[in-house]
Image 1 (spheres, one colour):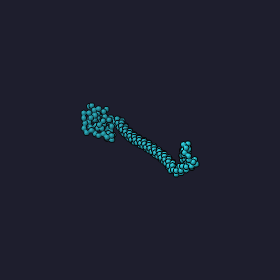
Image 2 (cartoon, one colour; image 1 turned 135 degrees about the vertical axis):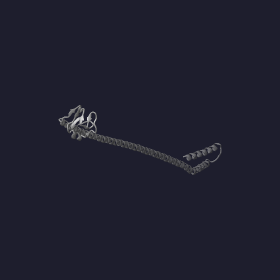
Image 3 (cartoon, one colour; image 1 turned 30 degrees about the vertical axis):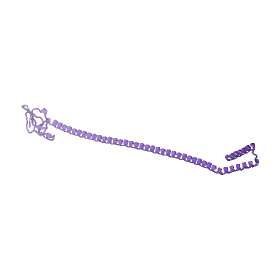
Image 4 (cartoon, one colour; image 1 turned 180 degrees about the vertical axis):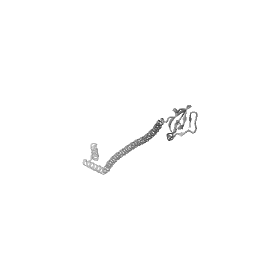
Length: 232
């Protein structure tokens, strides 16, 4: 379109020049100048046609450059979008790993606390069991000691009863008094609190009066020597 406009401008310019010559009295044939103007127009058209591929080529290059630039922009935009998506995905994976790590750590701490509580419970049960066993043993020992003491007390009571019985049976064997001394009958003795027996004493109430055999059976021994209160 540009070249057609250019040819039209050249054509009308030549016609103006011809008209100018005619008005100024130049006697030239009109057809000759018209032919010249047509030749000039055709010449400009040929030059325009020859020059047109260059312009088209330049326009094509511009269009091609524009398309290439647009493609590069689209490619860069796509790459940027992919890069952002990759970064977002990496961050998401990192956050997920961090969350899983925190959850795993929390589970391990919970398991450790549970194990500690279980161990503490076992220790408490073990201590309670030990204390129970110790208490049971102590109770058994105390029961055994009480039973032993009761048995010994029973034996002592039996022995005392026996002694009392023997004493009561021998009370009928009367002793004699002479000059402040009390003399036991034949086969009888006075047994002191120190398990020594005598045949004559001054205070018979301070002694047990029994047969000599009963005194020997109770563990009493004959006094080796006398004193101012008793004589062997």
